[in-house]
Image (cartoon, rainbow, N blue to C red; front, side, top):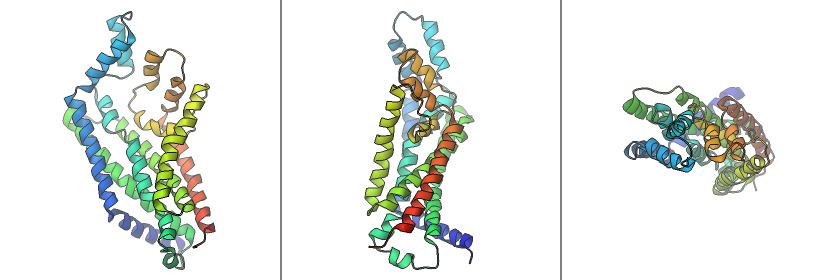
Length: 295
């Protein structure tokens, strides 16, 4: 049997293992619940109208009402399929959680529970096992994301009878973010003794350390387009709603938010950044696993 066939077998059975776990269905239920609640709140609270009213107050009384409306329309703050989709389909946090749920303990568990003594002696290279596990975790996370986006599309058809072109683009960025985050979680899983520790470390690093670095770069006038967290923000940048225009309305021509806004506005560049990081981190996790001993 060739290594490619072995990779296919490893991926198949690892994927089946993932979809049989309770966490898969828990994550799926959480995704559908998040989309459903967001759609319900958006419609019941008339969110665009409330936001426009509040934002107009912040602009001050010296700006004519017509100019306020123009500025808000330019920024995309109005009731539209794109603005609705921005709220119900921006699943960056869900992509992160799903990726680390599936990938955090994938390698660490083999060492933590000593199942590696049964798995590693098999005539399959460790690199094949790691890549097969990666593909299985990635596919499981993407499956849930795709269902979430399909549910968002149904909501759009119900309320607006159309699906914005930005929706599949947003899914593409979400898949790229998942690709990165699974690789990121695999690095911690290959390094740490326990799966829970690897999961927490991956989440905290992405949600705490990366934003601190990005904000520091923005505050000093640098454009943090190469930071994974800013690239992940591009999930919501596919609907032609300008974060930068909005930041200019409230923050003036300068300010640190301009760099943050610009860093999130190019979905293609963001996807390439995330996939590039993912490939490097996957290779790193393979090397770490090859060097790790069962102790």
